[in-house]
Structures are given as C-alpha cells and as structure tokens.
Amino acid sequence: MSISQHQTASGRPLRVAPAWVGGARPAGDEDPVLPVRDVVWIWSVRRYARAALWALPLSAVLLGWSTLGVDTPPGPLPVGLAAGWTATIAMIALTGLLAASRTRRSALLGLLIGLAGLVLLLPFAALPAGVGPDGVALPADRVHTASLVGAGVFGLGWLLLGWAVFRSKLVNPADGILLMLAAVSIGAGTYAVKPLPTVGALLLLAAGMGIAWTGNRLIPPS
Image (cartoon, rainbow, N blue to C red; front, side, top):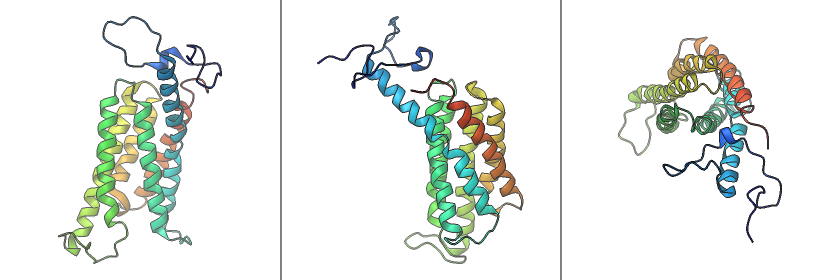
C-alpha cells in the first residue's frame, strides 16, 4: 500500500511549513518536494524538540532553588541532579532547534562540551567534603578543583549555545545574551560568591522562557 504525498501513514492530512522542512537533498536537485516519510520524520523530531525546550526554564527553577539554601525534604543532592538532568534535555532540544540554522556547528560544539562537563561534574556531586572518589587516582584535596573544572566546562558549553542562539536569527538575540550571562554563573557552580548563583538562575529562567516561547511559535502546531 502506497502512502499519498499529502497524507501521513495513518491517513490524516499532512500539514507542513515548507520553509522549515529543510531536508537534505542531493546536489543539483531543484525539486522542493520531499518524500512524505522524510517530512513526517523531520516534523516529529522538531515537534518533540520544541516541547523539550520547556526543560530549560524548569532547570533554571531547580537550579535557583538549590542556590537558596532552603532545607528541602529530599535534600540538596536530588534537586541538583534534577537540575542537571533537565539542563541536559534542554541542551539537546536547543541544539535540535538550531540544527537547520547557520550556527548549528557552534550549537553542536556547545552540546558536546556541555555533556563532557556534566560527565566530569556528576562523579563528585555526592562526595562529602574531604573524601576522594573510589577507584580514581585523585586525592581528596583535589576533588574541589576537579568539581570546578567540571562546572567550568559545563558553563563553557552553555556559553557556546548562547552564542549560537544570539547569531541564529531564529529567536530573540537578547535571549542568547541572557544565556551567555547565565553561563558565567553556571560555570562557577555553587562555589561562586552569593548571590551570583541565584542571579544566574534568574537570567537562565528569563532566557529559557523566551527561547521556549519563541521556539514553539516558529512553525504552526501539528
């Protein structure tokens, strides 16, 4: 059974925004029509990426809550881990949003560097003060330095993503500036002088709300 060029596999009418499809085509191919299965795939990926952008303001809220020093029932560690998890989802979604823009390379580099920083930071998140990691040749007095390095690499990833947002011309450039300013606080981690971490979380919240709101309005809803 063949699939119509104007219907999805389920038989429903296919609604796309041709300017935002941007699928890869062979060089010299002037036909703008893509196979329906490619259009549906691109549409689905971008729809889920736009929905996942709301993880950015959510991570800002969790990050800001962890900087206030409020005694929550689960403790600061689960809140910090949830903030890192939602921030990772937001980085992937933001890179997907910028995949068809002229700053896609900067966005991809920012994603890879951010993930590397998170991998460096997570092993030391649950370690008590003065305790070294088991199975790693790292003295206990160097754990603090290693955590700073991980937070700095993670912040560098957000800095590159902010630069990509600023130059992409897809969303408000001011959101990219706010994201770069928030990256300074993210790179300093919880070791920054207060109230810099809280101010950085507020900047990240403002940038995340703007990016998520604009990103979800780039193309019509399915």
